[in-house]
Amino acid sequence: MTVADPIWRPYTQHATSAPPVFIERAAGATLHAKEGRKIFDAISSWWVTLHGHAHPRIAAAIARQAASLEQVIFASFTHEPAERLSAALLAKAPRGLDRVFYSDDGSTAVEVAVKMAVGYWSRRGERRPLIVALEDAYHGDTFGAMSVSARGAFTADYGSMLFEVRRVPWNEPAALEALLKAEGERVAAMIVEPLVLGAGGMLMYPPAVLEAFADACARHGVLFIADEVMTGFGRTGTLFACEQAGVTPDILCLSKGLTGGFLPLGATLAKEAVFQAFRDQDRAKTFFHGHSYAGNPIACAAALASLAVFDEEPVFERIAKIAAIHQRELKRFAGRPQVVETRQTGTIAAVELRVGDSGYLSGLGPKLLEFYLSKDVLLRPLGNVVYLLPPYCSSERELVHAYDAIEESLVLLRD
Image (cartoon, rainbow, N blue to C red; front, side, top):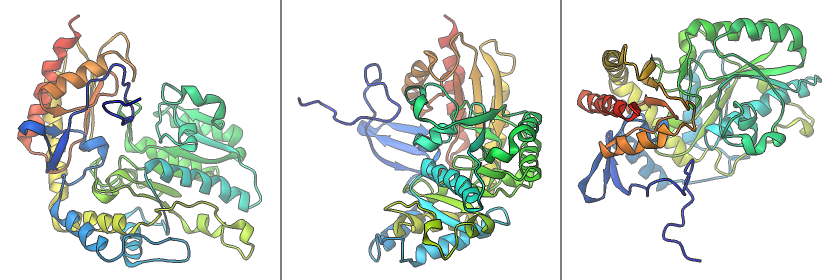
């Protein structure tokens, strides 16, 4: 059987979705489609594009690296881009992280973190089978990442295959304290999305709550994992969200913006104590995990170039400008009957719309997506939650246009 479009697309119900928009090229915050159409990429193409599409510095770094070393097995070998990137990440990450393990993407960075945490206790002679996670969390689509994510539409078919997890509300540190008092000796680690729960609906909590979670884990001898796959590299206003709480996690997961959005790359940073638990003359105590493209030289070169943009361009001025525009434009939704509330942390803004069928599978979501594309804005709502997470090069005009489209879309809620 021959089909017109053989591609099976992510998070797409092909029976009901519109045909995909064909993008020929991109520059800055603009996607250039066929026939001259220009679309504002208000969600950074699934949260990955930091400095803008086709940033010349990153593109040039990729070209240079591809011409000299494109790939080498990362067991028994190393190379300059990975060595330099590891040093750069540890210099910029919260102080106290000492080791870098490379993988492919955010989900695998989380898989690595969970395996490190459970293996850490096993290497120390303790069996700690439990992970604590937040309600409404999302950490990825591989099986370990699904296990520590909230149960729902994303995981419904695989529930019997996911491991047991303890959950606490994302804004209630007291609940964590009570759980750890009862079961702390069986808990290997807690994993959190710092300050912003992404796919769960852009739910937001203050730094004091993050600090309380980390403190509780430290008091009870439980490892603390920060999943900064989405929040890392300036999204919340600081380079890492953990900075706002003065927290250094035991394990830190990074991806998405790591390469500026150019290439897939995951990194899991760990404290030296975690690494040392696996270091032994007994080869059976090795950390048995790896990826074919771990530490890929081209991806590492892209990440180094992206970090250099932070050093050489006024990136945090751009971040502050976007945050200020969000704060101003969100005021237009105050008191609107169609709006439950608005939320903002740094460059991330969300408008939760009032509907009967809220949640990711809300029937409003596909209608909103189609409406925003008709206005030449890429906004992909999480059900009834419309969010903006734009590239840092986005202009005020582009952002205001996106907010105009959101305001216009409120008419879809009249019926």
